[in-house]
Length: 550
Image 1 (cartoon, rainbow, N blue to C red):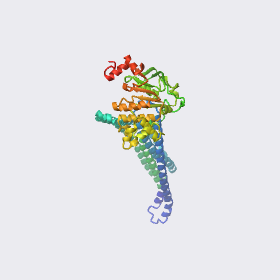
Image 2 (tube, rainbow, N blue to C red):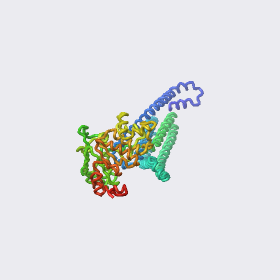
Image 3 (tube, one colour):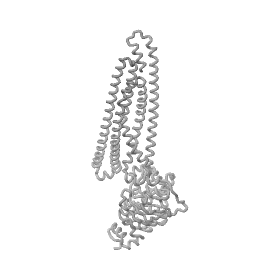
Image 4 (tube, rainbow, N blue to C red):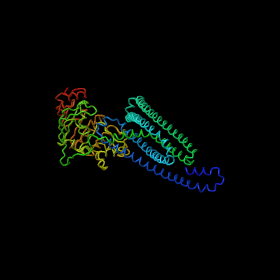
């Protein structure tokens, strides 16, 4: 461009311009070549950067989700679902956007700054040195500002998590919200959290705006200084008109690049904070691995279960001991029912056997093997079958919900499992049969239907040990009778632990245990325990409003 300006200055006022085109063609062609090269490289780097950004986001999401799935159950006890989902969505998106903008704008800006700085030194070292004297102070101020804004950005993103969690809970439990007419209160709670988010983001915007305003003031002052010095050196014949124009264009390119970097500053701050939160979960190591350990060969597997001096308290409330020096032996092929009032540790036994948590002291064994030495995935996939009080179904077809228990199962195996769970008849009555969509969490099915699908899902993997955690307590009498019939069929040939609050479901158990404050206070058959007139008799009386032996 400087060459073009020199040719123009040379022929200014010259009416005889026969040589103008020949002298102008060389710098003009060079300039056109530069513009074409710039266009090609602009396309190349934007296309490549888009691919790179999407791959980075893909790997971050994949690694984050896999890491979350591997975390201990205690992690999910402490974290709200909305906060975890927010890191998977908003934080990854913020990091991707910041990454692409920073690399795109930042790489171009830094390259132009370095290239144009070299050009400035070539054109006029004296003017360049004078112009660059103020830069160190700007860098120092920017560093201090950056650290302050990073703190605000982290607080803002943490508040976004809280806001998302409130919305997630309200929407996920909309039936409960609606049944208690709590729409206004949930709305007010969300607005309150959203307002805190707004205030923090406004503070972040104020700080970024202040930084960018100061940066622009410095940059514009630098251009003014360049014009003043350039004019002086032009008047004293130290520089040509083309050199002054070249210097000014290079300085303006640096100005635009610095302005671009200052604009990127806010995005970089937000991206760094988002990336730190994502990698916090990615790098988090669970205390118990999902895979690794020994397995018991099928030909010698019996299904004996023993709790030996087990002491346990939940990680989220370590001072409240649920089980203390607890002992229990469940022989293979037997059905043991555990009853007692709420809060006495019944469901805790199932959670420990599933190894959702590890015991604080003592050990739990299957066929004499400490379950901590067994492969957890093998244990849950092949040995244990859990049917809980509130079965959770996925928003897909009935066929796929049952097949969840054994992904490689054929349609015939799925249908057989449904028949064993007394579910085949009601499934085939649906217009689309096994291909009926159940809705989110099985919302379109009744409680009894959901429970029978859950039983079929558990039976499909043919577990050696069946765990029934209040499996019929949420059902009406008719549904309970059908589901209980399916459970009685499922128990044959298996070791079964039945956790029950409703005593009508445990009459046929081989042994009934009464749990009170984490200890076994009574043990025996239904008739034997009634004769004792102790805890079990009292529970029976409470449920029937009159003693059996009246």
